[in-house]
Amino acid sequence: MIARDTENYCDETDILHASHHGSIHGADPIFIRKCNADYTIVSTKSGVHENVPHPAAMRLYKINTRKEVCRTDQDGDLQLAF
Image 1 (tube, rainbow, N blue to C red):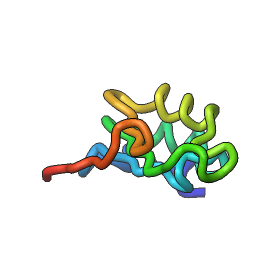
Image 2: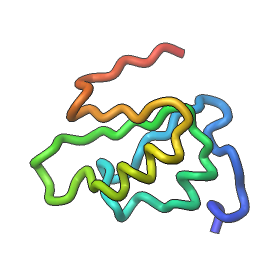
Image 3: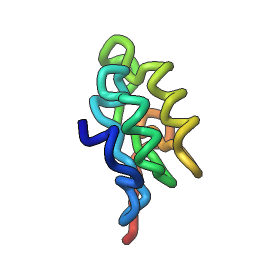
Image 4: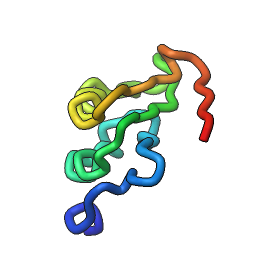
């Protein structure tokens, strides 16, 4: 599995885009930790799907993101400048 053999996936942008709207199914702890992201973006809308974003997934992202986890359901639209 690539997640077990690679480190610092997010070196170029330092941004991880969370998969599956923050569901627990896309929140692999090894992958998230090894991303070593400064920021994680969770594109989601609360109340649309059951358990999305999932509280355990959000904890994983928060613990393993160096600076900030941004959620579109709480923070609104995000604009990034590169």
